Length: 97
Length: 278
Picture 1 (tube, chains in turn red, orange):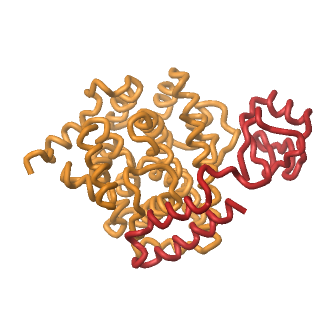
Picture 2 (picture 1 turned 135 degrees about the vertical axis):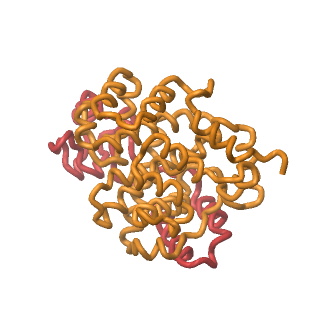
Picture 3 (picture 1 turned 90 degrees about the vertical axis):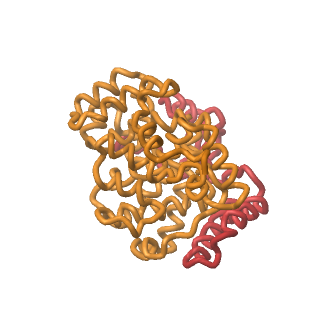
């Protein structure tokens, strides 16, 4: 779920989270953006919003996993660290689907 | 070792941070004010309101995902009423110290914001009454690193290089250069600034949560948050390897797979927020 700045919003993108001000929901989750909505969002001074779809990742998946292995290299024999690593690995892999 | 810094001198220097020429005037004013044993919310509110840049930064923090009042708080007086004295004090120190540090230790701000988000999430999941107070502990847990870096840039650089080269954690490498680690240094400072006991203890024992007597739960939360943020690789805490989690602290929190997945997803937002606030 990438956070996209207002200048980069395009018609057809779908809101991944409801857009709200205070307690009032302005646009519901799943709203498909059109030119008008995008202009209004800009007018409200909102800087960026979450849209559906995979986020752009700074490094390729193999590199992200290699860095993860590096980070955990000292502690894999310690209690609970395997479980933590496994969960982070699953999370990282989920970012590339 | 002769090039080590004597602890008493170190403590003296850390505690007289106001006298440093490199300390920006905002931070100096905040630090002087915090040294007073009693300080009122209105006095703090005035200090923030009189500084437009500080006002913007504080409101941005409070309205971010890290504090969970997105888009709702538009004035300093509203913020002080809602969050209370110790949270506002912590935020003030947090934004003024870490923005300064971002220039010299890239990624410490991102690491600290990540810990702010995770401590608050765990505190909420565990039903603690004041999750915002715990999240301030997350924000400030590494303040000792910022201060050591500010006063002993060269020695601290060497400690970071040693940590990277030897594949150890920064709190271990620090001992070689300062005889104490950043947790001890940070606790001197927040004690001097009259922060509440739970904050003092979480900072002092975030690498040894078993030693906390007054706030074992809060300290365990900060410790586990630190490990999870490092595990995810958010920011740069001064080294490249994840330390082992303290088993008793992990067991005390007893997080489910769902909890951890939830935390990791929220960390994605924290990382992008950190980049926006600089």
